[in-house]
Image 1 (cartoon, rainbow, N blue to C red):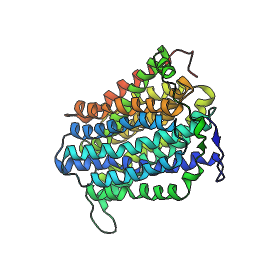
Image 2 (cartoon, helix red, strand yellow):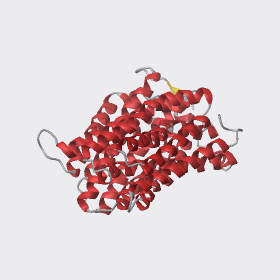
Image 3 (cartoon, helix red, strand yellow):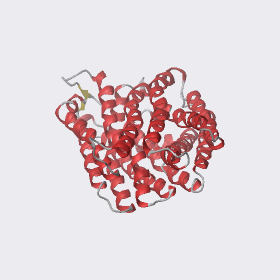
Image 4 (cartoon, rainbow, N blue to C red):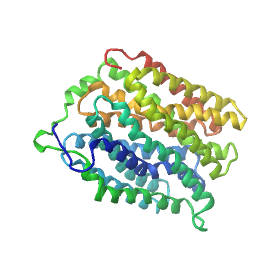
Length: 400
């Protein structure tokens, strides 16, 4: 695909613009880890229902991943489409704030998350095509924005829920409206400035995705093993992430603000490490880092389950969640390495597996932790440990 050079800023700035965009488009999603438990407590839902709410949202996102990947591999003017996702997300969550029950809220959240999903495929597809030799690095730069949203959006939401804004008390509905403001602002910034910097593709050179080749790649022993590893990885990650704010409030007796601070601090560890580990993975290989992170996460999950002391629990959460978060870009780079073509479509498959199938980790963790939420971390420990074992058993033929 021949790219048309942009007369705007140099293309090497795009990973940083996209990281900022990632921060803003993921801001409402990150805040939902505090807003969903607040909504659940307001409606009187069980932990399994809160987990199901987040699962449905992630399934909604997974429905948009592959179509967005196909679109990004075929269209020439990708900047405008990328820009439109900010407004999709903003309007979707504003509508969700008016929902009066479980299913209306779940469906509207799922629709809003489709715009978020489309952003991920478009942005990451553009980046890995522009830097084929530094895939984990550019994915790590892009990922830092989403990781920061995962850190600071829950903290911001918990502050709003516990302390209000400018002296006004806010419930979960008001908070959901406030947290979409950064998304809308970034949408206008992309509209007037950033979208023009995205390299266009000559219409005559836009290639059709090689579906036969992709199917052949994913049907190999390496491809099948990679799918298994990604599913196990995300089952553990989403399960622990979904239950942690609720666990800290209900089992540890913390208020929303305290739970938000600890949750944000735990995710900050993974956010800081993600670009560094992405660069390292380009140099030393993917599998050793994934294996080490998975084993550390499994150890952390067991610590959380067995401990009663708050300090040990927080330390266990740092290992359990921080380690898995830190290698997400490395896992995605493995998927692109698998085929080396139709990058956005390949990432669409990877995201659909990670956030679609893996989304059931939230509801499974809620069901397992129905009577004791600490049991949810045993599930994460088992899934993470299994993912690490599968990672080191992947054939060497196509892995780095």
